[in-house]
Image (tube, rainbow, N blue to C red; front, top):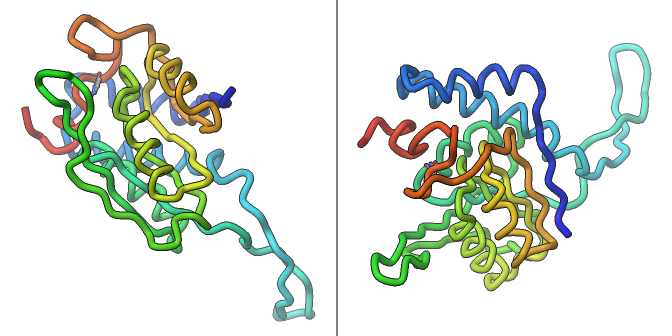
Length: 209
Ligand code: URA
């Protein structure tokens, strides 16, 4: 069963509360999302491998640690996932960024892929899917399916706010994928919104309705 890691550092909780407030505008919302993603990045990257490197300080020659091993790839689910890219790229500038675009078929309500582009060496990278809201889990499951079909071997899912229903759905289909969230909310409402949530993340990031 995949691990669910709740990154509920006090600063993250504080910033998320401001994001949830309906009176917070797009500029602040975007900046807070970037800041929280950066803070979550601390946990997300906790397991990355280090290697010894020889360096010379102004005082002596010495051996220190630097990041080695698997390279990372970040994949936002369009469009709200774009709001979580900068926070991780700021932290891991060498990461490559892929994209997955999904829309919901109005009749079947199933997610349909309309765009995808990944790093060519996806098999060798640890791939990190980002999307602020894990609601029904349908998009997350589809995005993971697509990444695996394109060769991804190691995948993490990173969400700002998750509904228990969405977590259960991802765990049902992709028990190998660990899920990082800043908060697990109460439930989904009849319209598929997370409660209490923060509304439509894409609209709040981009100032649309
Ligand atoms: N997507 C959102 O942006 N918000 C929700 O509450 C659920 C899905």
